[in-house]
Length: 299
Image (cartoon, rainbow, N blue to C red; front, top):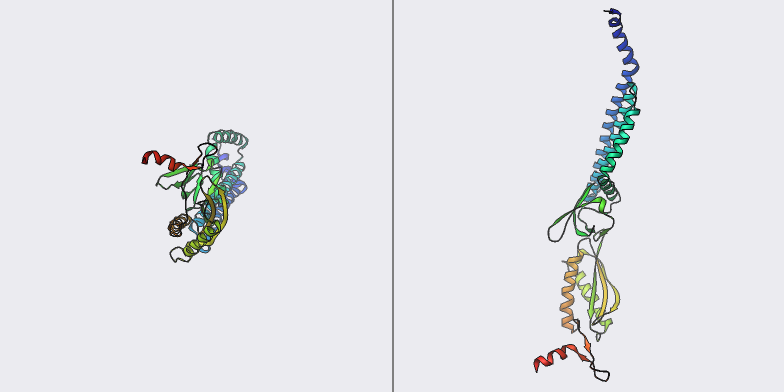
């Protein structure tokens, strides 16, 4: 056996380590340091957001986004580091890149729905379209948002049912509680009523409601009177709305409706139900169909 090879082996290992090993070691150390720096930056950013923004939904959104960003950067660092190490070892990367490209295409076709959900969820979080606690209508489903994730969104409707909606299916979002909310009233009164008087009564009701300590904190702006909106079949429709804090519009609206009914009854303002007027020939006087129906019964 040739002993010269064994004698030269330590020298060859030393030369390889000095030429290649130190570079590989430096790459591994650089990857580790980069990971630590990235982790610390993410924690600092999240701590800053938690300390300056008390909104829990916003904190959750920032945490999700920073975690996703950190994972992407870490994968990028690891990928570059591994490819550099392989090139230092003299491994031809071309076959691996081709195989990775073909495999990526196959995985992309198989998981395109998943990728679409994740990308859509990322932009929903980034643009702050929906927050936890909002009441929304998405994908023909309405409910309270209980969780916003990268892949799915969880809604709970008024019956307590939970709906899991993939983010990739969301094309239109109707957010009923973003920044503020409104309750729109369509008040129908009889044609014989003085609409100016009715509108003033509505303003007085809303003003009293806004001064009530039980409801005042939830009302952002006074009643906005839009005026006569429609001449319906049996009523003149007056339209107005009240602006409230998010998710408070339904409680304010129900209380306002209760007071409208009681006040209209006290003032004798007619809130008509649908009815029809029948004509028996051109020269006949118009006759209310209620009388026409009741007369045969009463007789």
